[in-house]
Length: 103
Image (cartoon, rainbow, N blue to C red; front, side):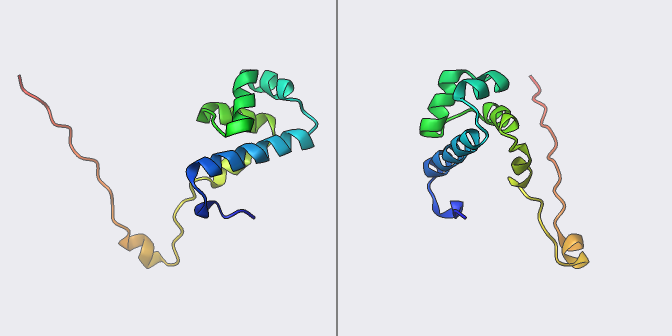
């Protein structure tokens, strides 16, 4: 298991790209097949596998093709509470009122 918290953002992106490439190869898919199925341009996919750079919506489409979409469910986990007191004491967030500008 790779500790992503110890990596720079660019290294995390390259690690994700390397794992996506490994999964693609393990599934026996070519870059062209993934590009066709995901709707991501082949050159964009190649750049992603080489550099880790890819728009988030394109990453989601690639993840669907690579049958890895469920992993996005753990990306931003809900806070865990150990007791009801923690839930009750949790501060309530309120939205601010919009200011209207009188001209």
